[in-house]
Length: 432
Image 1 (spheres, one colour):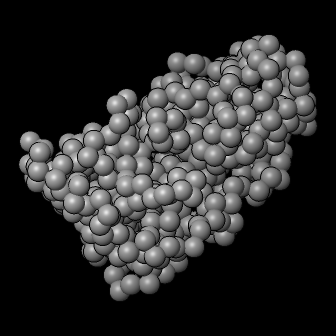
Image 2 (cartoon, one colour; image 1 turned 90 degrees about the horizontal axis):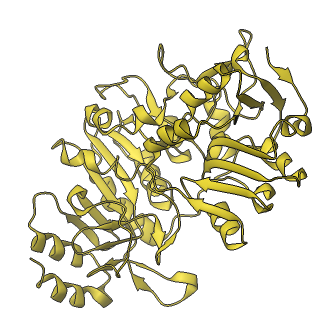
Protein backbone atom coordinates (compact mmCIF):
# COMPACT_ATOMS: atom_id res chain seq x y z
CA UNK A 1 0.00 0.00 0.00
CA UNK A 2 1.22 3.53 -0.74
CA UNK A 3 2.48 5.99 1.80
CA UNK A 4 -0.01 8.86 2.09
CA UNK A 5 1.85 12.15 2.27
CA UNK A 6 1.17 15.86 2.15
CA UNK A 7 2.29 17.53 -1.05
CA UNK A 8 5.29 19.22 0.61
CA UNK A 9 6.48 15.87 1.95
CA UNK A 10 6.06 14.16 -1.43
CA UNK A 11 8.08 16.92 -3.08
CA UNK A 12 10.92 16.23 -0.62
CA UNK A 13 11.31 12.77 -2.18
CA UNK A 14 12.67 14.33 -5.38
CA UNK A 15 16.44 14.63 -5.17
CA UNK A 16 18.27 17.88 -6.05
CA UNK A 17 19.72 15.99 -9.04
CA UNK A 18 16.98 13.77 -10.39
CA UNK A 19 14.78 12.79 -13.33
CA UNK A 20 11.02 13.20 -13.38
CA UNK A 21 8.34 12.55 -16.00
CA UNK A 22 4.69 13.62 -16.06
CA UNK A 23 1.98 12.90 -18.63
CA UNK A 24 0.84 15.25 -21.35
CA UNK A 25 -1.54 18.05 -20.40
CA UNK A 26 -4.68 16.85 -18.61
CA UNK A 27 -2.83 13.96 -16.93
CA UNK A 28 -0.44 16.24 -15.07
CA UNK A 29 -0.50 16.32 -11.23
CA UNK A 30 -1.03 20.07 -10.82
CA UNK A 31 -0.75 20.21 -7.05
CA UNK A 32 2.52 18.29 -7.05
CA UNK A 33 4.06 20.39 -9.85
CA UNK A 34 3.11 23.63 -8.11
CA UNK A 35 4.52 22.34 -4.80
CA UNK A 36 7.91 21.71 -6.43
CA UNK A 37 8.36 25.49 -6.67
CA UNK A 38 8.79 25.72 -2.88
CA UNK A 39 12.29 24.27 -3.22
CA UNK A 40 15.39 26.18 -4.28
CA UNK A 41 18.00 23.46 -3.90
CA UNK A 42 17.86 22.08 -7.43
CA UNK A 43 21.21 21.04 -8.87
CA UNK A 44 20.09 19.19 -12.00
CA UNK A 45 16.40 18.37 -12.23
CA UNK A 46 15.47 16.91 -15.64
CA UNK A 47 11.72 16.87 -16.36
CA UNK A 48 10.03 15.30 -19.38
CA UNK A 49 6.45 16.23 -20.24
CA UNK A 50 4.28 17.90 -22.85
CA UNK A 51 1.60 20.58 -23.14
CA UNK A 52 1.73 22.10 -19.68
CA UNK A 53 -1.72 23.17 -18.51
CA UNK A 54 -0.48 25.81 -16.04
CA UNK A 55 2.50 28.08 -15.40
CA UNK A 56 4.47 25.94 -12.97
CA UNK A 57 7.03 28.15 -11.27
CA UNK A 58 9.47 25.28 -10.76
CA UNK A 59 10.49 25.57 -14.42
CA UNK A 60 11.79 29.09 -13.77
CA UNK A 61 14.14 27.84 -11.06
CA UNK A 62 17.89 27.58 -11.75
CA UNK A 63 19.12 24.12 -12.74
CA UNK A 64 15.65 22.88 -13.70
CA UNK A 65 15.51 21.63 -17.28
CA UNK A 66 12.23 20.89 -19.02
CA UNK A 67 12.07 18.69 -22.11
CA UNK A 68 8.72 19.04 -23.85
CA UNK A 69 7.24 16.91 -26.60
CA UNK A 70 4.49 19.45 -27.31
CA UNK A 71 4.43 23.19 -26.71
CA UNK A 72 1.35 25.03 -25.48
CA UNK A 73 0.90 28.58 -24.21
CA UNK A 74 2.69 27.72 -20.94
CA UNK A 75 5.79 26.35 -22.71
CA UNK A 76 5.95 29.39 -24.97
CA UNK A 77 5.60 31.78 -22.02
CA UNK A 78 8.23 29.98 -19.94
CA UNK A 79 10.65 29.81 -22.86
CA UNK A 80 10.26 33.53 -23.55
CA UNK A 81 10.68 34.26 -19.82
CA UNK A 82 14.10 32.60 -19.84
CA UNK A 83 13.31 29.12 -18.55
CA UNK A 84 15.28 26.19 -19.94
CA UNK A 85 12.49 24.72 -22.07
CA UNK A 86 13.63 22.53 -24.93
CA UNK A 87 11.49 20.89 -27.62
CA UNK A 88 11.92 17.18 -28.31
CA UNK A 89 10.79 16.46 -31.89
CA UNK A 90 8.54 13.41 -31.76
CA UNK A 91 5.00 12.55 -32.64
CA UNK A 92 2.74 11.51 -29.78
CA UNK A 93 3.30 7.76 -30.24
CA UNK A 94 7.06 8.22 -29.97
CA UNK A 95 6.76 9.78 -26.51
CA UNK A 96 6.41 6.25 -25.14
CA UNK A 97 9.85 4.92 -26.17
CA UNK A 98 11.40 8.27 -25.21
CA UNK A 99 10.06 7.97 -21.66
CA UNK A 100 11.10 4.31 -21.54
CA UNK A 101 14.64 5.23 -22.57
CA UNK A 102 14.83 8.02 -19.99
CA UNK A 103 13.41 5.68 -17.30
CA UNK A 104 12.89 8.63 -14.94
CA UNK A 105 13.49 7.80 -11.29
CA UNK A 106 10.29 9.63 -10.34
CA UNK A 107 6.99 9.55 -12.20
CA UNK A 108 3.91 11.49 -11.14
CA UNK A 109 0.37 11.51 -12.49
CA UNK A 110 -3.11 12.62 -11.53
CA UNK A 111 -5.86 10.03 -11.09
CA UNK A 112 -9.36 9.77 -9.70
CA UNK A 113 -9.57 8.51 -6.08
CA UNK A 114 -9.34 4.76 -5.48
CA UNK A 115 -12.49 2.68 -5.76
CA UNK A 116 -13.59 -0.03 -3.31
CA UNK A 117 -11.15 -2.49 -4.90
CA UNK A 118 -8.17 -0.13 -4.67
CA UNK A 119 -8.07 0.91 -8.34
CA UNK A 120 -7.33 4.49 -9.39
CA UNK A 121 -8.67 5.44 -12.81
CA UNK A 122 -6.18 7.36 -14.95
CA UNK A 123 -9.11 9.65 -15.70
CA UNK A 124 -8.75 11.97 -18.71
CA UNK A 125 -5.32 10.83 -19.92
CA UNK A 126 -3.88 7.54 -21.13
CA UNK A 127 -1.44 8.85 -23.70
CA UNK A 128 2.14 7.60 -23.79
CA UNK A 129 2.91 7.08 -20.10
CA UNK A 130 0.67 4.18 -19.02
CA UNK A 131 3.26 1.44 -19.54
CA UNK A 132 6.02 3.47 -17.85
CA UNK A 133 3.78 4.23 -14.86
CA UNK A 134 3.33 0.48 -14.36
CA UNK A 135 7.08 -0.15 -14.80
CA UNK A 136 7.92 2.61 -12.33
CA UNK A 137 5.50 1.20 -9.77
CA UNK A 138 7.05 -2.25 -10.08
CA UNK A 139 10.65 -1.01 -9.63
CA UNK A 140 11.78 -0.63 -5.98
CA UNK A 141 14.48 1.83 -7.04
CA UNK A 142 11.98 4.22 -8.56
CA UNK A 143 9.17 6.33 -7.08
CA UNK A 144 5.60 6.46 -8.42
CA UNK A 145 3.60 9.40 -7.05
CA UNK A 146 -0.15 9.57 -7.71
CA UNK A 147 -2.17 12.69 -7.02
CA UNK A 148 -5.73 11.57 -6.30
CA UNK A 149 -8.28 14.24 -7.17
CA UNK A 150 -12.04 13.78 -6.84
CA UNK A 151 -12.63 16.51 -9.45
CA UNK A 152 -11.18 14.21 -12.11
CA UNK A 153 -13.70 11.75 -13.59
CA UNK A 154 -13.53 8.00 -13.24
CA UNK A 155 -13.15 6.69 -16.79
CA UNK A 156 -12.48 3.31 -18.37
CA UNK A 157 -10.29 1.44 -20.81
CA UNK A 158 -10.84 -1.88 -22.58
CA UNK A 159 -9.61 -5.13 -21.10
CA UNK A 160 -7.74 -7.26 -20.78
CA UNK A 161 -4.71 -5.29 -21.95
CA UNK A 162 -5.72 -1.66 -21.49
CA UNK A 163 -7.74 -1.23 -18.31
CA UNK A 164 -6.73 2.44 -17.85
CA UNK A 165 -5.99 2.22 -14.15
CA UNK A 166 -3.38 1.74 -11.43
CA UNK A 167 -3.78 -0.27 -8.26
CA UNK A 168 -2.85 1.09 -4.86
CA UNK A 169 -0.35 -1.77 -4.53
CA UNK A 170 1.66 -0.28 -7.43
CA UNK A 171 1.77 3.24 -5.99
CA UNK A 172 4.63 4.37 -3.74
CA UNK A 173 3.20 7.70 -2.63
CA UNK A 174 -0.39 8.94 -2.64
CA UNK A 175 -1.18 12.64 -2.31
CA UNK A 176 -4.51 14.41 -2.62
CA UNK A 177 -5.53 17.57 -4.41
CA UNK A 178 -8.72 19.40 -5.35
CA UNK A 179 -7.38 21.45 -8.24
CA UNK A 180 -9.81 21.83 -11.15
CA UNK A 181 -9.04 20.09 -14.46
CA UNK A 182 -8.12 22.46 -17.25
CA UNK A 183 -11.07 24.52 -18.47
CA UNK A 184 -10.63 24.56 -22.22
CA UNK A 185 -13.58 26.65 -23.31
CA UNK A 186 -14.31 27.10 -27.00
CA UNK A 187 -14.22 30.68 -28.26
CA UNK A 188 -17.29 31.93 -30.17
CA UNK A 189 -17.30 30.61 -33.73
CA UNK A 190 -16.26 33.17 -36.34
CA UNK A 191 -17.85 33.58 -39.77
CA UNK A 192 -14.69 32.16 -41.37
CA UNK A 193 -14.75 29.10 -39.11
CA UNK A 194 -18.45 28.57 -39.83
CA UNK A 195 -17.84 28.73 -43.59
CA UNK A 196 -15.00 26.19 -43.36
CA UNK A 197 -17.15 23.94 -41.17
CA UNK A 198 -19.94 24.05 -43.75
CA UNK A 199 -17.56 22.76 -46.42
CA UNK A 200 -16.11 20.14 -44.07
CA UNK A 201 -19.52 18.83 -43.02
CA UNK A 202 -20.29 17.82 -46.62
CA UNK A 203 -17.76 14.99 -46.21
CA UNK A 204 -19.58 13.60 -43.16
CA UNK A 205 -22.14 10.98 -44.12
CA UNK A 206 -24.25 8.82 -41.83
CA UNK A 207 -22.19 6.10 -40.18
CA UNK A 208 -18.73 7.64 -40.64
CA UNK A 209 -16.13 7.49 -37.88
CA UNK A 210 -14.94 10.92 -36.77
CA UNK A 211 -11.65 12.31 -35.54
CA UNK A 212 -11.43 15.98 -34.64
CA UNK A 213 -8.58 18.11 -33.43
CA UNK A 214 -8.67 21.12 -31.15
CA UNK A 215 -9.91 24.60 -32.05
CA UNK A 216 -12.75 26.62 -33.47
CA UNK A 217 -13.16 24.76 -36.76
CA UNK A 218 -13.58 21.24 -35.30
CA UNK A 219 -15.91 22.74 -32.69
CA UNK A 220 -17.98 24.39 -35.43
CA UNK A 221 -18.15 21.11 -37.36
CA UNK A 222 -19.34 19.28 -34.25
CA UNK A 223 -22.02 21.92 -33.66
CA UNK A 224 -23.28 21.62 -37.23
CA UNK A 225 -23.42 17.84 -37.01
CA UNK A 226 -25.15 17.92 -33.61
CA UNK A 227 -27.88 20.17 -35.02
CA UNK A 228 -28.10 18.37 -38.39
CA UNK A 229 -30.17 15.47 -39.64
CA UNK A 230 -27.35 12.93 -39.91
CA UNK A 231 -26.08 10.52 -37.29
CA UNK A 232 -25.08 6.98 -36.45
CA UNK A 233 -21.51 8.29 -36.16
CA UNK A 234 -18.52 6.63 -34.58
CA UNK A 235 -15.66 8.35 -32.76
CA UNK A 236 -11.97 7.44 -32.87
CA UNK A 237 -10.04 10.55 -31.88
CA UNK A 238 -6.74 11.29 -30.16
CA UNK A 239 -8.51 14.01 -28.16
CA UNK A 240 -12.05 13.87 -26.81
CA UNK A 241 -13.48 17.38 -26.85
CA UNK A 242 -16.52 19.29 -25.68
CA UNK A 243 -17.78 19.15 -29.27
CA UNK A 244 -17.64 15.35 -29.32
CA UNK A 245 -19.58 15.31 -26.03
CA UNK A 246 -22.24 17.49 -27.69
CA UNK A 247 -22.52 14.95 -30.49
CA UNK A 248 -23.12 12.22 -27.90
CA UNK A 249 -25.67 14.34 -26.07
CA UNK A 250 -27.52 15.00 -29.34
CA UNK A 251 -27.87 11.26 -29.89
CA UNK A 252 -25.72 11.34 -33.01
CA UNK A 253 -23.07 8.83 -31.87
CA UNK A 254 -23.84 5.11 -31.95
CA UNK A 255 -20.36 3.62 -32.64
CA UNK A 256 -22.28 0.78 -34.29
CA UNK A 257 -20.60 0.76 -37.71
CA UNK A 258 -16.91 1.26 -36.93
CA UNK A 259 -15.51 -2.20 -37.56
CA UNK A 260 -13.14 -1.98 -34.58
CA UNK A 261 -13.98 -1.14 -30.97
CA UNK A 262 -17.67 -1.16 -31.91
CA UNK A 263 -19.88 0.35 -29.25
CA UNK A 264 -17.24 2.71 -27.87
CA UNK A 265 -15.90 6.17 -28.62
CA UNK A 266 -12.12 5.73 -28.50
CA UNK A 267 -9.69 8.40 -27.30
CA UNK A 268 -6.37 8.79 -25.49
CA UNK A 269 -7.03 12.08 -23.63
CA UNK A 270 -9.82 14.56 -23.03
CA UNK A 271 -9.98 18.29 -22.39
CA UNK A 272 -12.79 20.80 -22.47
CA UNK A 273 -15.25 22.66 -20.26
CA UNK A 274 -16.15 21.55 -16.70
CA UNK A 275 -19.35 19.93 -17.99
CA UNK A 276 -17.23 17.53 -20.06
CA UNK A 277 -15.49 16.14 -16.96
CA UNK A 278 -18.79 15.76 -15.13
CA UNK A 279 -20.30 13.95 -18.12
CA UNK A 280 -17.31 11.62 -18.47
CA UNK A 281 -17.50 10.48 -14.83
CA UNK A 282 -18.68 6.86 -15.03
CA UNK A 283 -19.53 7.21 -18.74
CA UNK A 284 -19.21 3.75 -20.27
CA UNK A 285 -19.52 4.78 -23.93
CA UNK A 286 -16.10 6.52 -24.00
CA UNK A 287 -12.95 4.45 -23.55
CA UNK A 288 -9.38 5.65 -23.02
CA UNK A 289 -6.56 3.65 -24.62
CA UNK A 290 -2.80 4.29 -24.89
CA UNK A 291 -1.73 6.49 -27.78
CA UNK A 292 0.18 3.58 -29.35
CA UNK A 293 -3.26 2.07 -30.06
CA UNK A 294 -5.36 5.15 -30.72
CA UNK A 295 -2.91 6.82 -33.11
CA UNK A 296 -1.73 3.69 -34.90
CA UNK A 297 -2.39 4.29 -38.63
CA UNK A 298 -3.19 0.60 -39.00
CA UNK A 299 -5.81 0.79 -36.24
CA UNK A 300 -7.20 4.06 -37.60
CA UNK A 301 -7.55 2.51 -41.05
CA UNK A 302 -9.52 -0.42 -39.61
CA UNK A 303 -12.30 1.98 -38.68
CA UNK A 304 -15.04 2.24 -41.26
CA UNK A 305 -15.20 5.47 -43.29
CA UNK A 306 -12.88 7.63 -41.21
CA UNK A 307 -13.29 11.40 -41.58
CA UNK A 308 -10.36 13.19 -39.91
CA UNK A 309 -10.50 16.94 -39.33
CA UNK A 310 -7.29 18.77 -38.44
CA UNK A 311 -5.61 22.13 -38.89
CA UNK A 312 -2.41 23.71 -40.16
CA UNK A 313 -0.37 26.89 -39.86
CA UNK A 314 0.43 27.13 -43.57
CA UNK A 315 0.56 25.02 -46.75
CA UNK A 316 2.63 25.56 -49.88
CA UNK A 317 1.57 24.75 -53.43
CA UNK A 318 3.40 21.45 -53.26
CA UNK A 319 1.08 20.45 -50.42
CA UNK A 320 3.70 20.54 -47.67
CA UNK A 321 2.08 21.28 -44.31
CA UNK A 322 3.52 23.39 -41.50
CA UNK A 323 1.50 22.68 -38.38
CA UNK A 324 3.77 23.10 -35.35
CA UNK A 325 6.07 26.09 -35.96
CA UNK A 326 5.47 29.78 -36.65
CA UNK A 327 8.20 31.78 -38.38
CA UNK A 328 10.67 28.97 -37.61
CA UNK A 329 9.92 29.06 -33.85
CA UNK A 330 8.36 26.11 -32.05
CA UNK A 331 4.68 26.84 -31.46
CA UNK A 332 2.94 23.54 -30.68
CA UNK A 333 3.97 19.99 -31.56
CA UNK A 334 3.61 17.15 -34.02
CA UNK A 335 1.15 15.18 -31.93
CA UNK A 336 -0.98 12.96 -34.13
CA UNK A 337 -0.98 15.19 -37.22
CA UNK A 338 0.65 12.67 -39.52
CA UNK A 339 -1.11 9.70 -37.93
CA UNK A 340 -4.51 11.18 -38.74
CA UNK A 341 -3.55 12.44 -42.19
CA UNK A 342 -1.84 9.39 -43.66
CA UNK A 343 -4.66 6.80 -43.40
CA UNK A 344 -6.78 8.57 -46.01
CA UNK A 345 -4.25 7.45 -48.60
CA UNK A 346 -4.45 3.83 -47.48
CA UNK A 347 -8.22 3.39 -47.75
CA UNK A 348 -10.35 4.90 -50.51
CA UNK A 349 -13.32 5.52 -48.20
CA UNK A 350 -11.28 7.40 -45.56
CA UNK A 351 -10.93 11.18 -45.87
CA UNK A 352 -8.47 13.55 -44.19
CA UNK A 353 -9.48 17.22 -44.10
CA UNK A 354 -6.86 19.87 -43.34
CA UNK A 355 -8.84 23.01 -42.47
CA UNK A 356 -7.41 26.51 -42.11
CA UNK A 357 -8.40 30.11 -42.71
CA UNK A 358 -6.95 31.54 -45.90
CA UNK A 359 -5.21 34.38 -44.02
CA UNK A 360 -3.97 35.23 -40.55
CA UNK A 361 -3.11 38.59 -38.97
CA UNK A 362 -0.08 38.09 -36.68
CA UNK A 363 -0.28 40.37 -33.67
CA UNK A 364 -3.29 42.11 -35.19
CA UNK A 365 -1.19 43.36 -38.12
CA UNK A 366 -1.81 43.06 -41.85
CA UNK A 367 -3.33 39.84 -43.13
CA UNK A 368 -0.86 37.22 -44.38
CA UNK A 369 -1.79 34.36 -46.68
CA UNK A 370 -1.55 30.90 -45.16
CA UNK A 371 -1.38 29.36 -48.62
CA UNK A 372 2.01 30.19 -50.12
CA UNK A 373 3.86 29.41 -53.33
CA UNK A 374 6.84 28.09 -51.40
CA UNK A 375 7.75 28.04 -47.72
CA UNK A 376 10.70 30.22 -46.65
CA UNK A 377 14.11 28.58 -46.53
CA UNK A 378 14.59 26.56 -43.37
CA UNK A 379 10.87 25.99 -42.77
CA UNK A 380 10.19 22.85 -40.74
CA UNK A 381 7.62 20.63 -42.44
CA UNK A 382 5.21 18.75 -40.17
CA UNK A 383 3.43 16.59 -42.74
CA UNK A 384 4.80 15.77 -46.21
CA UNK A 385 2.94 16.54 -49.41
CA UNK A 386 2.14 12.96 -50.39
CA UNK A 387 -0.06 12.45 -47.33
CA UNK A 388 -2.52 15.25 -48.11
CA UNK A 389 -6.04 14.45 -49.23
CA UNK A 390 -8.33 17.48 -48.82
CA UNK A 391 -7.56 21.10 -47.91
CA UNK A 392 -10.38 23.47 -46.95
CA UNK A 393 -10.46 27.24 -46.47
CA UNK A 394 -13.43 29.58 -46.24
CA UNK A 395 -13.12 29.97 -50.02
CA UNK A 396 -13.57 26.34 -50.96
CA UNK A 397 -12.25 22.81 -51.12
CA UNK A 398 -9.09 21.47 -52.80
CA UNK A 399 -9.13 17.71 -53.34
CA UNK A 400 -5.56 16.57 -53.95
CA UNK A 401 -5.69 12.78 -53.98
CA UNK A 402 -4.48 11.34 -57.29
CA UNK A 403 -3.79 14.71 -58.90
CA UNK A 404 -0.55 15.74 -60.58
CA UNK A 405 1.74 18.26 -58.92
CA UNK A 406 0.44 21.02 -61.21
CA UNK A 407 -3.20 20.10 -60.67
CA UNK A 408 -2.64 20.11 -56.91
CA UNK A 409 -0.95 23.51 -57.03
CA UNK A 410 -3.83 25.00 -59.04
CA UNK A 411 -6.43 23.49 -56.71
CA UNK A 412 -4.69 24.99 -53.67
CA UNK A 413 -4.26 28.39 -55.32
CA UNK A 414 -7.97 28.49 -56.16
CA UNK A 415 -8.98 28.37 -52.47
CA UNK A 416 -6.55 31.11 -51.40
CA UNK A 417 -7.72 34.60 -50.46
CA UNK A 418 -8.77 36.60 -53.56
CA UNK A 419 -6.05 39.21 -52.90
CA UNK A 420 -3.29 36.64 -53.52
CA UNK A 421 -5.09 34.13 -55.73
CA UNK A 422 -3.84 35.50 -59.06
CA UNK A 423 -0.21 35.45 -57.92
CA UNK A 424 -0.56 31.91 -56.61
CA UNK A 425 -2.24 30.75 -59.82
CA UNK A 426 0.66 32.22 -61.79
CA UNK A 427 3.09 30.37 -59.51
CA UNK A 428 1.03 27.18 -59.91
CA UNK A 429 1.48 27.41 -63.67
CA UNK A 430 5.22 26.96 -63.16
CA UNK A 431 4.88 23.85 -60.97
CA UNK A 432 5.84 20.53 -62.53
